[in-house]
Length: 333
Ligand code: BMA
Image 1 (cartoon, rainbow, N blue to C red):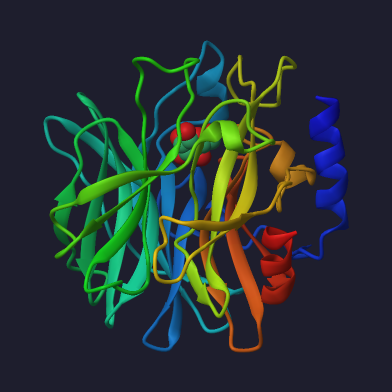
Image 2 (spheres, rainbow, N blue to C red; image 1 turned 45 degrees about the vertical axis):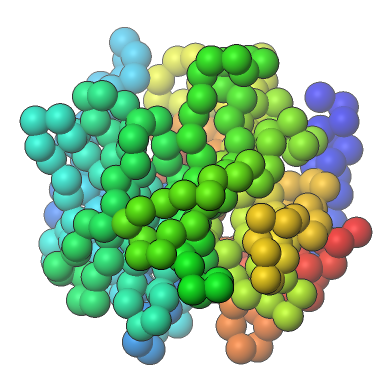
């Protein structure tokens, strides 16, 4: 814990600014049933900022008195001219439900060759799957791929490399692991975004000093002159009870950052040794699950400003900004 405190002291010195009017999206902004709006995928598409956000509805804080209560979930859609003030569309844009599928959640958006791809997690009666869909208008989505269980937190690179789509993913292996939730980040490629292969371990959770449990891909990578800059989330289990609507919540989620080789993104050039985002403000500490930072969108502006969007306390969506050179430097130190 002391080692973690020292890392967090460095995090506090970083030049990453949490937007003063956070959250940028909450349930009150949504014109249909909504209790929590978070873990959004955000990108720029055809001149506008677009956000696909996780919308949990049909449950209340009081429902949790006896334990965790699953929500109904759909994916909402919002647009913005500046990436800060958002207008939510009248209806959700995506929902999956079959006899086996309960819901899709945690969308991530990536534009490749002028088409918008959405990766998402899928809760099913037979495990958690990760899906990839493509859309040009956010009303019709063509599902290209659905993984076998258990997998989630999938993100796509914004360009093909050597003619192939590249993705990061987070399978959850349970046999032969050193502890219950030791999950890592993997990388794979595909000729068509439907069939995936060449899976390789990219980053093991044991290599992240601010995780004693699992890690996972966060926002889709952005291209910089020095490499692919990409966030991940890292979980640190603690003994103390954290604020949550249900009991027994003990996981703190941090935002981490790494830099991958431009030509061969399965090579890590550098990892920031400390979290870039740690939960410390009221809207990050208190919510459905307190002390959760879950980045899902990152945009590099022409000015060099990087916008990092993150779900906060599994309840609202927030924004932080930084300078791209400071972020690259933090990975290389
Ligand atoms: C993960 C996912 C996310 C969630 C996070 C923190 O395992 O379920 O959707 O934001 O936990 O609760």
